[in-house]
Length: 197
Ligand SMILES: Nc1ncnc2c1ncn2[C@@H]1O[C@H](COP(=O)(O)OP(=O)(O)OP(=O)(O)O)[C@@H](O)[C@H]1O
Ligand SMILES: O=C(O)c1ccc[n+]([C@@H]2O[C@H](COP(=O)([O-])O)[C@@H](O)[C@H]2O)c1
Image (cartoon, rainbow, N blue to C red; front, side):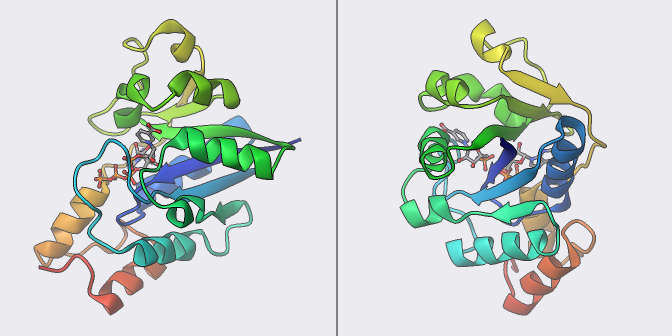
Protein backbone atom coordinates (compact mmCIF):
# COMPACT_ATOMS: atom_id res chain seq x y z
CA UNK A 1 0.00 0.00 0.00
CA UNK A 2 1.31 3.46 -0.95
CA UNK A 3 1.70 5.90 1.94
CA UNK A 4 1.31 9.57 1.06
CA UNK A 5 1.44 12.74 3.12
CA UNK A 6 -0.85 15.56 2.12
CA UNK A 7 0.71 19.00 2.47
CA UNK A 8 -2.23 21.39 2.25
CA UNK A 9 -1.72 25.11 2.27
CA UNK A 10 -2.60 28.50 0.97
CA UNK A 11 0.89 28.68 -0.55
CA UNK A 12 0.72 32.44 -1.10
CA UNK A 13 3.54 31.78 -1.98
CA UNK A 14 5.06 28.34 -1.31
CA UNK A 15 8.39 28.77 0.52
CA UNK A 16 11.33 26.73 1.73
CA UNK A 17 9.71 26.09 5.13
CA UNK A 18 6.91 24.15 3.40
CA UNK A 19 9.41 22.19 1.33
CA UNK A 20 11.60 21.29 4.29
CA UNK A 21 8.55 20.12 6.27
CA UNK A 22 7.53 17.93 3.31
CA UNK A 23 11.03 16.51 2.87
CA UNK A 24 11.31 15.82 6.61
CA UNK A 25 7.98 13.96 6.55
CA UNK A 26 9.27 11.72 3.75
CA UNK A 27 12.50 11.15 5.62
CA UNK A 28 11.24 10.58 9.17
CA UNK A 29 8.01 8.73 8.48
CA UNK A 30 9.17 6.79 5.41
CA UNK A 31 6.31 8.08 3.26
CA UNK A 32 6.36 7.23 -0.44
CA UNK A 33 5.00 10.54 -1.69
CA UNK A 34 4.02 14.05 -0.68
CA UNK A 35 0.92 15.49 -2.27
CA UNK A 36 0.85 19.29 -2.27
CA UNK A 37 -2.71 20.57 -2.30
CA UNK A 38 -3.20 24.33 -2.71
CA UNK A 39 -6.41 25.44 -1.00
CA UNK A 40 -9.09 27.49 -2.77
CA UNK A 41 -10.42 29.25 0.35
CA UNK A 42 -8.59 28.14 3.51
CA UNK A 43 -11.20 27.65 6.26
CA UNK A 44 -9.49 29.50 9.12
CA UNK A 45 -7.84 32.42 7.35
CA UNK A 46 -9.52 35.74 6.87
CA UNK A 47 -9.12 37.58 3.58
CA UNK A 48 -8.44 36.22 0.12
CA UNK A 49 -4.92 35.20 -0.94
CA UNK A 50 -2.93 37.97 -2.66
CA UNK A 51 -1.91 35.87 -5.67
CA UNK A 52 -4.49 34.28 -7.95
CA UNK A 53 -5.35 30.58 -7.74
CA UNK A 54 -3.52 30.05 -11.04
CA UNK A 55 -0.35 31.73 -9.79
CA UNK A 56 -0.33 29.89 -6.46
CA UNK A 57 -0.74 26.60 -8.32
CA UNK A 58 2.00 27.51 -10.82
CA UNK A 59 4.39 28.31 -7.98
CA UNK A 60 3.65 25.04 -6.16
CA UNK A 61 4.24 23.14 -9.40
CA UNK A 62 7.54 24.94 -9.97
CA UNK A 63 8.65 24.18 -6.41
CA UNK A 64 7.77 20.48 -6.71
CA UNK A 65 9.18 20.02 -10.20
CA UNK A 66 12.03 17.56 -10.43
CA UNK A 67 11.50 16.02 -6.99
CA UNK A 68 10.83 12.30 -7.52
CA UNK A 69 8.39 12.02 -4.60
CA UNK A 70 6.49 15.31 -4.82
CA UNK A 71 3.11 15.55 -6.59
CA UNK A 72 0.78 18.52 -6.93
CA UNK A 73 -3.00 18.12 -6.89
CA UNK A 74 -5.39 20.87 -7.96
CA UNK A 75 -8.39 19.08 -6.41
CA UNK A 76 -9.30 21.92 -4.03
CA UNK A 77 -8.89 24.67 -6.64
CA UNK A 78 -11.07 22.66 -9.03
CA UNK A 79 -13.72 22.10 -6.34
CA UNK A 80 -13.67 25.76 -5.32
CA UNK A 81 -15.28 27.19 -2.19
CA UNK A 82 -14.04 26.55 1.32
CA UNK A 83 -11.35 23.87 1.30
CA UNK A 84 -12.29 21.54 4.11
CA UNK A 85 -9.60 18.90 4.42
CA UNK A 86 -12.11 16.18 5.29
CA UNK A 87 -13.80 16.64 1.89
CA UNK A 88 -10.44 16.49 0.14
CA UNK A 89 -9.30 13.39 1.98
CA UNK A 90 -12.63 11.64 1.36
CA UNK A 91 -12.42 12.43 -2.37
CA UNK A 92 -8.82 11.27 -2.59
CA UNK A 93 -9.61 8.03 -0.79
CA UNK A 94 -12.36 7.39 -3.30
CA UNK A 95 -9.92 8.07 -6.15
CA UNK A 96 -6.96 6.16 -4.65
CA UNK A 97 -8.32 3.39 -2.41
CA UNK A 98 -4.90 1.73 -2.12
CA UNK A 99 -3.18 4.77 -0.61
CA UNK A 100 -2.87 5.42 3.11
CA UNK A 101 -2.98 9.16 3.75
CA UNK A 102 -1.43 11.34 6.44
CA UNK A 103 -1.84 15.11 6.73
CA UNK A 104 1.13 17.37 7.43
CA UNK A 105 0.64 20.50 9.57
CA UNK A 106 2.77 23.15 11.23
CA UNK A 107 2.50 24.21 14.87
CA UNK A 108 0.03 27.00 14.15
CA UNK A 109 -2.41 24.50 12.64
CA UNK A 110 -1.84 21.98 15.45
CA UNK A 111 -3.10 24.74 17.74
CA UNK A 112 -6.47 24.98 15.99
CA UNK A 113 -6.84 21.35 14.89
CA UNK A 114 -9.73 20.72 17.27
CA UNK A 115 -11.70 23.41 15.40
CA UNK A 116 -11.27 21.80 11.98
CA UNK A 117 -14.43 20.81 10.13
CA UNK A 118 -15.59 17.24 11.03
CA UNK A 119 -12.15 16.65 12.53
CA UNK A 120 -13.10 13.29 14.11
CA UNK A 121 -14.02 11.92 10.69
CA UNK A 122 -10.86 13.42 9.19
CA UNK A 123 -8.72 11.79 11.89
CA UNK A 124 -10.48 8.48 11.34
CA UNK A 125 -9.65 8.59 7.64
CA UNK A 126 -5.94 9.33 8.16
CA UNK A 127 -3.02 7.19 9.20
CA UNK A 128 -2.02 10.22 11.28
CA UNK A 129 -1.47 13.96 11.32
CA UNK A 130 2.22 14.78 11.09
CA UNK A 131 2.97 17.89 13.14
CA UNK A 132 6.06 20.07 12.97
CA UNK A 133 6.95 22.96 15.19
CA UNK A 134 7.79 26.24 13.49
CA UNK A 135 9.31 29.35 15.06
CA UNK A 136 6.75 30.81 17.46
CA UNK A 137 4.56 27.71 17.25
CA UNK A 138 5.86 24.63 19.09
CA UNK A 139 4.35 21.27 18.22
CA UNK A 140 2.35 21.34 21.44
CA UNK A 141 -0.34 18.69 21.66
CA UNK A 142 -1.34 19.35 25.27
CA UNK A 143 -4.44 21.41 24.44
CA UNK A 144 -5.87 18.78 22.08
CA UNK A 145 -8.57 16.39 23.30
CA UNK A 146 -7.06 12.95 23.82
CA UNK A 147 -8.50 10.98 20.88
CA UNK A 148 -7.20 13.67 18.52
CA UNK A 149 -3.88 14.02 20.34
CA UNK A 150 -3.23 10.32 19.85
CA UNK A 151 -3.59 10.77 16.11
CA UNK A 152 -0.81 13.38 15.84
CA UNK A 153 2.80 12.29 15.40
CA UNK A 154 5.38 15.03 15.81
CA UNK A 155 8.93 15.18 14.56
CA UNK A 156 11.79 17.64 14.70
CA UNK A 157 12.80 19.59 11.66
CA UNK A 158 15.44 22.29 11.30
CA UNK A 159 13.51 25.40 12.26
CA UNK A 160 12.96 27.83 9.41
CA UNK A 161 11.77 31.26 10.31
CA UNK A 162 9.91 31.72 7.04
CA UNK A 163 6.24 32.40 6.46
CA UNK A 164 4.35 33.39 3.33
CA UNK A 165 3.35 36.58 5.16
CA UNK A 166 7.02 37.47 5.69
CA UNK A 167 7.79 36.76 2.03
CA UNK A 168 4.92 39.02 0.90
CA UNK A 169 5.93 41.78 3.32
CA UNK A 170 9.55 41.71 2.23
CA UNK A 171 8.49 41.96 -1.41
CA UNK A 172 6.17 44.86 -0.60
CA UNK A 173 9.09 46.63 1.06
CA UNK A 174 11.29 45.99 -1.95
CA UNK A 175 13.56 43.64 0.01
CA UNK A 176 15.04 40.43 -1.36
CA UNK A 177 13.19 37.14 -1.01
CA UNK A 178 15.93 35.11 -2.65
CA UNK A 179 16.66 31.85 -0.78
CA UNK A 180 13.40 32.07 1.18
CA UNK A 181 11.66 30.47 -1.80
CA UNK A 182 13.09 28.10 -4.45
CA UNK A 183 14.90 29.85 -7.31
CA UNK A 184 12.16 28.92 -9.80
CA UNK A 185 9.52 30.48 -7.56
CA UNK A 186 11.69 33.55 -7.03
CA UNK A 187 12.00 34.00 -10.80
CA UNK A 188 8.22 33.53 -11.22
CA UNK A 189 7.40 36.15 -8.57
CA UNK A 190 9.81 38.67 -10.08
CA UNK A 191 8.71 37.99 -13.68
CA UNK A 192 5.02 38.36 -12.83
CA UNK A 193 5.61 41.17 -10.37
CA UNK A 194 3.57 39.58 -7.58
CA UNK A 195 3.41 40.91 -4.02
CA UNK A 196 5.06 44.17 -5.02
CA UNK A 197 4.10 47.42 -3.37
N1 LIG B 1 8.29 27.56 8.31
C1 LIG B 1 7.44 26.53 8.47
N2 LIG B 1 7.81 25.43 9.17
C2 LIG B 1 6.93 24.39 9.33
N3 LIG B 1 5.66 24.36 8.85
C3 LIG B 1 5.25 25.42 8.14
C4 LIG B 1 6.10 26.55 7.92
N4 LIG B 1 5.42 27.47 7.17
C5 LIG B 1 4.20 26.95 6.97
N5 LIG B 1 4.07 25.72 7.55
C6 LIG B 1 2.89 24.86 7.53
O1 LIG B 1 2.54 24.63 6.17
C7 LIG B 1 1.11 24.58 6.02
C8 LIG B 1 0.65 25.58 4.96
O2 LIG B 1 0.99 26.87 5.41
P1 LIG B 1 0.57 28.20 4.65
O3 LIG B 1 0.49 27.96 3.19
O4 LIG B 1 -0.58 28.83 5.33
O5 LIG B 1 1.90 29.09 4.89
P2 LIG B 1 2.20 30.19 5.98
O6 LIG B 1 3.65 30.53 5.87
O7 LIG B 1 1.72 29.76 7.33
O8 LIG B 1 1.30 31.38 5.41
P3 LIG B 1 0.86 32.81 5.99
O9 LIG B 1 2.09 33.49 6.54
O10 LIG B 1 0.28 33.49 4.79
O11 LIG B 1 -0.16 32.52 7.07
C9 LIG B 1 0.52 24.85 7.41
O12 LIG B 1 0.24 23.60 8.03
C10 LIG B 1 1.66 25.55 8.12
O13 LIG B 1 1.60 25.37 9.53
O1 LIG C 1 -10.70 21.39 7.21
C1 LIG C 1 -10.55 22.35 7.99
O2 LIG C 1 -11.44 22.71 8.78
C2 LIG C 1 -9.24 23.11 7.94
C3 LIG C 1 -8.97 24.12 8.86
C4 LIG C 1 -7.76 24.80 8.76
C5 LIG C 1 -6.85 24.48 7.77
N1 LIG C 1 -7.15 23.48 6.91
C6 LIG C 1 -6.22 23.15 5.82
O3 LIG C 1 -4.90 23.14 6.31
C7 LIG C 1 -4.03 23.63 5.30
C8 LIG C 1 -3.17 24.73 5.92
O4 LIG C 1 -4.03 25.82 6.21
P1 LIG C 1 -3.50 27.30 6.14
O5 LIG C 1 -4.67 28.14 6.53
O6 LIG C 1 -2.38 27.35 7.15
O7 LIG C 1 -2.99 27.55 4.75
C9 LIG C 1 -4.90 24.12 4.15
O8 LIG C 1 -4.87 23.13 3.14
C10 LIG C 1 -6.28 24.23 4.75
O9 LIG C 1 -7.31 23.95 3.82
C11 LIG C 1 -8.31 22.79 6.97
